Amino acid sequence: MIKRTQFILLILFLLSGFQETIAQTTSYLKNPLITDAITLFNREQYDSALTICQSIIDADSTNPMGYFGAAVIYYGTIRNYWTRYFEAEFDGLITIGIEKSEQMIEKCPNNAESYFMYGAGLGFRGMYKIKKGEWFSAFKDGLSGYRNLKKAYTLDDKLYDAYYGLGVFYYMKSVKAKVLTFLRLMKDEREKGIEFIKLSIEKGRFVPLEAQLELIKIYYEEGQYETALAECRIIEPEFHLNTGYQYVLANILDKRQLWEEAYSRYEIVIDNIFRSPYPKSNALLGTCYYGLANAEYHMEQNHNALINCYKAIDYFGNFDPDKEFTSSMVDIGDIQNATKDLLKKLQKATEINTEN
Image (cartoon, rainbow, N blue to C red; front, side):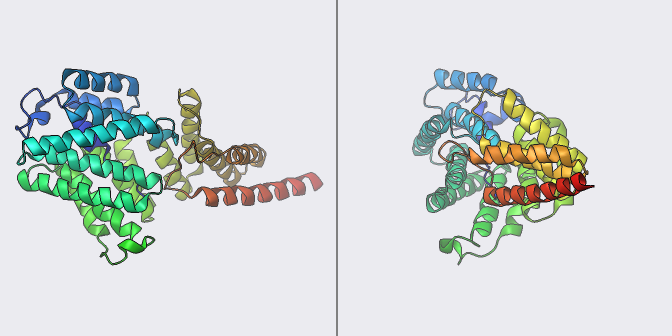
């Protein structure tokens, strides 16, 4: 499931400044712009954040933070809007950021911050490779990222934000061990991963909100929908403008059979898609229109449900995997089948009503 990743770990780098030497492990912690950067990212104000990233690169091209930050922003569109449109930009920037971080380690081998950035960059790239189905390569990046994050924490035991990336790694490799043969000999450390993420929420300086969103996805994966919903209510003020958050919440509400609110959240996602400047994902639109139709069916609004069901089928018919990604929270094939089954129910109900 978890595809997303190390966003805040990288946002830390995005605006931390590095106005002092890289040997100072807490330099990024002192920059007051970090909070503003996180807010911009969570609210999808990507253009403003990209401008800041470019200013960091212009000020010091050896600083990996600007490259990482820009990569995160491009990935934000990929993740939230299920589009491959910015793949080239992401690949180029994340690669440069990783190379710059590696060079920093060579210059300052005992610098926790350098290992932190290097590990987060590798882990983030690994999460992206999972989206592309490059499982073995993704695991290699994830393992290397984990080792470097662990090294960062060893050098600075107050770097609690590193626990977020470590926790995601423990959970992810345990979950994927169920389906990937080369991981099957590894022990199940899902609970350990969850505890690490909780620790980053409790003691981390910058990752708590992002880690909490990741924990919500884990609760969803584990079938703990009530807990996931309660956590959503906590972070709603910060994420209410975020399309990815609205989609996650809509799925949770669907599982809890809270049809009216689920309907409204799917509507928000659809509205955001059509208002955005990014290429439209047929898979995401199809999934959301199915969500609307399913909610309407349970609210006995069959006529509207039938209309949205047809819309979902039309969008699924135009799905292009060469241009679109999908979410690990749902299986597109399953959703397509569910849409067809719902259509049959609605057509049958319409026939009965016509006969009467």
